[in-house]
Image 1 (spheres, rainbow, N blue to C red):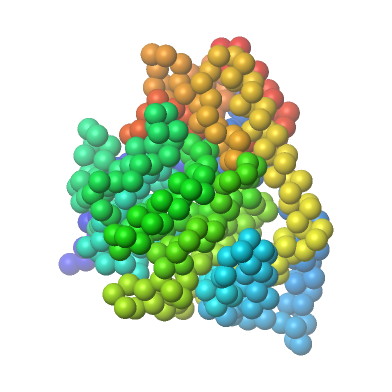
Image 2: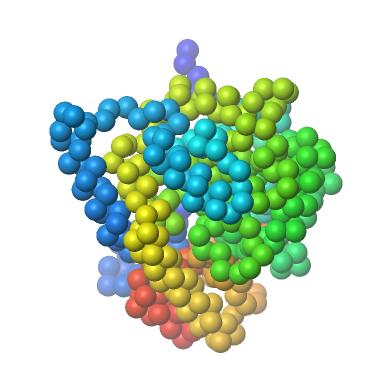
Length: 404
């Protein structure tokens, strides 16, 4: 008799953003006249920049000729993209990452969910609380998280690191030593950024205790302040204890194209085995590579015109973040984030939690956010807003919230 993976049955409810989408869909059906403004899911709204479009057209033309046609991509990605990433994202920042340590994929979310496969089921994970759901959910699906307690919203075998106002939304080094440590900075959902000296403490902690850091740097392009590392490899010793995931989705608007990459340094070994060899084996077995045309589009992001065009888009989104942050702060709300990340971490008014505030905004202002409790127990009093919307709609959403 066929049996299901019982760990899927232990997952609480549906995926966070699917739940939000269903609730908004129901409200829209009940109130078809409502003009809803969505500041919930972090999807981009600006079109692809001209340099990327030009590269896509050129690559599509190449695919139409026998001499330049490409089939399966190399397991780790085309050399032209890996070499460009190694130079532009790492060497120029003083990080000695080689193209051979870079694995091209269809997005950081997939890599963040899949990377746990190369580690033992007996490893214990530590996550920030609140946290991007894929880190915990993918480990729960694998059977690594123990039992879920609906009262506390926590898994028994997960080490939670509360990120609260009191900690500046940064995690403290845990007393219980984890095997795998998930860090995402600039952070989704809180928008917090970790100074280099604090990140160095985490690297030193991992080295001392034989842990591995899984570092999600999907929002590094949004960093505006000095002293905030764009890569964990800016820290001393990180190549021996850290894996880094990055994405083109928010940096260059590739949410519809799908492109990302993971860096697994040659120096990182697990029980004497190179982690890069394990990831390469998994990558080659389960993945056939991002399309040639998409990898050429990714290469174009690093061209001179591409860099300037992408920076302009990022400024647009960060101006939205400033608009939200300033407008709601002036209205008396407690607002965090929005300085080095495109996310606003909005505290619910006194006497409300984030879920109740989500409902109030939807019902009365027709504005959609994401309840903070969906990211973990420490997010209960908050709501996440994104800066990826249209400027005028973002401005209108702020005014609607101010007028509640």
